[in-house]
Length: 625
Image: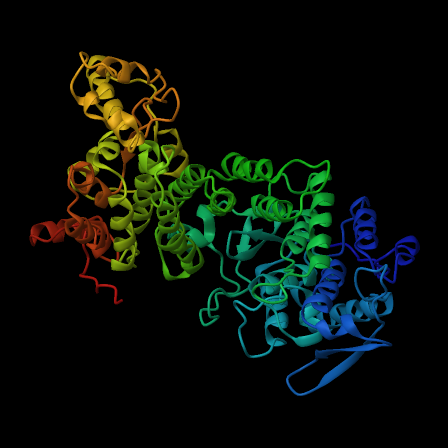
């Protein structure tokens, strides 16, 4: 266990104060990140938290004539006043004095050191579970009694020290910073996509919960996270979290900065600071294993591109590549980030593919109530974004509409197949009538000709309608998912091509002279011939003057793994959709879901002897609307 130097900043770094521009903050971070020693999490969290809260929570300071007052709650009954100088035109934000930052920093160290006596734990070289739990208790017991799950600007130590409020991530960061104050540098953050815990001990093999999730009424602090991993919960990303170094923890506190002032207004200065700091961390290599931070940087670049930097689309792709290479495709948000980018830029086919890839990532998990955030993400995609895409694409008669693209239909089915498999084996149902109606409406937008162009196959287990265990995500990636480059019977396909191209020409050239009687009377007519109509379309499936409504490419091949979607195979490909049957099948409870758990061993033998299904332990209540 090492000793911490009380002098957190060098004299040169202190001369950068008062901080009043984004450039000065960036210079400070660059200087700290270049050190050979580890950065001080508490200090940096206080600095960025002070700037964020000043610019987003106290807008009256921006219009002060002589001086303004920033009111910050110390506890539930008292307040203290901090004098903030007015903002000059050449500055980005009010001056942040070193004396204020230092006072808060000293206060945090005093809280930790006065509450935790390391000698009681034998002065261990590495942190123990009891010591980590004690630091967590210190933070936990000094918070206000309310839980703030969806409140903004509560993730920094500045919020903790001035208002005794922290969100879920803020508590975890405070615990790691507290352990750093005590000299235990083996305690680090482990970050999933919606949760945080710590690793500690020799080689970081121990794990411990230090914060809450959700409403805070299920406190598991001090416990290892093994149960969540074994339950296949998305919250624990199959045991593939981002394991932070001290520099990655700096990246996490920068990535957690929230520029929002209101639901529709952001602080330009805070967003600019966050974007600049993320580029500093990107250049120093501290985002190479951090998909969420790359996605946040890409979002900021989309709003305000930095000259000379790579485009935001490339950053979205980098985040996905990192998630696949480093975390076994266990992370979902890189795909939804990319899908949102494509959606905003009206690249609807690419958006559908990204959303389908997100569903491929979620299919390896079992849904639980703790997965509320990702559930809401998929619900928004299914019930708002995709229906809007269908509305936009179906409102015109464009030959390039995705409604005439069989690959887009395959992406759509793959998206729902992933959702259905996410539900299988889960104790809580996912799909209800609120999901079924948008799906049925969306599928009905695709013509039967487009739907039948997709070659759908199912797993043997799904076709036999017997329960199956979910394969690991890495194995699923190896399976063929969408497009088969080889088409079987070329002669049959050519015949189908001819038929589809004629229909394509009729649809696309509707209202033109091609629909004159002479078009239907055969090659002997004076105005044209059937053969000429066919040969006006080139081999790629596009017309000489316009695109063909149905893109003639190798047939997309889709492999369905979920029971529900496999059961819908014939209904989806039928010429006339039976929407009622599709809704019933989609909302029905799957066999592997009816019981809270599968029976194994002697229990399974007893169930079989009694004539009960070995895969069902008890009936499950249906989900209420």
